[in-house]
Image (cartoon, rainbow, N blue to C red; front, side):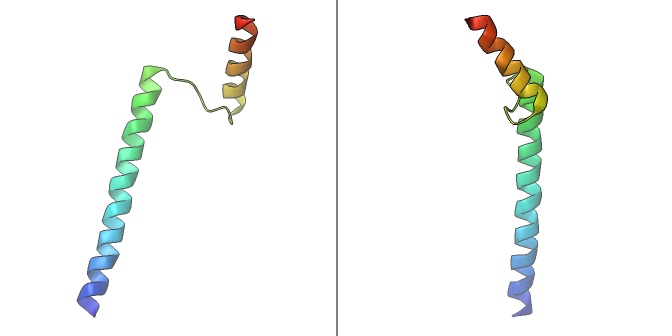
Length: 56
């Protein structure tokens, strides 16, 4: 029982570390490419509104 619990515990922690690493790597890649900012951020929505005004 203890052995199975250890596998589940460290498996879950390992998955979370791997997922965090992959997420951080993808975020950095998008930041370097200069993609759109999130529309939820203050400067992101301002960027989108300025682009929409320029397209009119």
